[in-house]
Amino acid sequence: MNISNTPKTRNIVPFFLLSGLLTITAGLMTGCSSSETRPVAEAEPQQPVITEQAEAPKKEIRIKAEYPRQYTVKKGDTLWGISSMFLQDPWYWPEIWQKNQQVQNPHLIYPGDVLTLVYVNGQPQMLVNESKHKQVQQAAEEGGLAVKKLSPSIRTSPLEASIPSIPGDAIRQFLTKPRVVTKEQLEDAPYIVGSEDNHLVLGSGDRVYIRGEIDKERVRYSVFRPGKALRDPETNEILGYEAVYTGEVHIVAYDDPASGDLTFSEREVLLGDRLLPEDRSKIKNLYFPHVPDREVNAQIMELNEALAGVAQLQVVTINKGERDGLEVGHLLATYTNGDTVRDYHNFRDSEPVKLPNERSGLVMVFKTFDQVSYAITLESRRVIRNYDYLHTPKY
Image 1 (cartoon, one colour):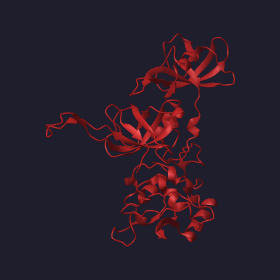
Image 2: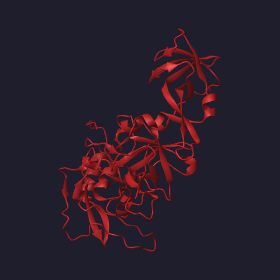
Image 3: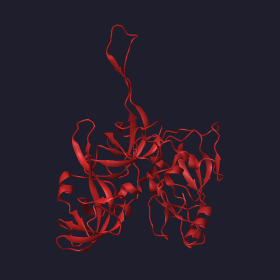
Image 4: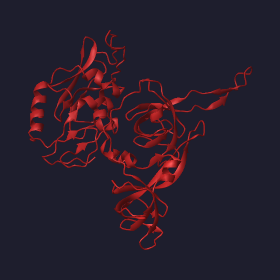
């Protein structure tokens, strides 16, 4: 991950996002010179259970067996990564941070802040060194440190550049492409009918002519080619059609046919390719990972850019979407389907035996459509395969 050292850039860590942010890997945090590992044999309990109180439901906060006694926040950290150093379930970070009264604005921490996990009345709580916090906060606000704002967003403005919660390249192409649309949306979309020089295969810089209803309030459109049907693995129902991104076009005349210039081509643009409004969700990418408040039962239906299986920081398509209550940031545990075997040692019962499904990883939904969603793998205990099941994580 490249980090700019420009003095004008800020590096602020909003801790209220720590419950919902991703990590590259827990391994990126190991070996850090700014942390001291806590011995397992110390007196404090390693996996405390928060006592049930009247104002809150009982919740088990599982602290890792070994965690840093102190940790100094540094450039290059990710929010999910810091919480993964202390908690077995990183999404529970607000449970140990939200009652922090040490700083005027507990939502922000900075590179240079020193974090310490302590126990207060038997409950784990994260403390920040108050005097150090004031120093680094003042320096960051005055621009005295070459720091960056540590946030989950992926921005392009140099002064507002921030360290993303995950590598931007992992999902950037999926924020705007491909898309999942209905058959009617594709059929009703404007399409390329010809080109200035009668080329059949088109690319950036070519003038194209478009037929169909074009919104005169728009000058930029994305170009897509109708792709494969996405079918539910269980019911075989078509949940949508994948629109394959091919490029961008700038409309210069709204006649019939309209005229436009291809300003970018991801792949060859062909006659018949369709125009869809530009998707601006790429600038709305704050992530708040959280466990759904109900049981979710879904299934992986496509492995994006993979054949046999995926691992960490790869994208999968799942057969649930907005109409099923899924939202951006939802965390789902993946389970590999257990094999069916025959018990040759039980002569009275010759029926096949279904072995249990085993958890294979954890994914986060980052883009939703009506009946389909895209998710990125945060953890992979084993290879995550097509048709693996997804459920609300219990641990």
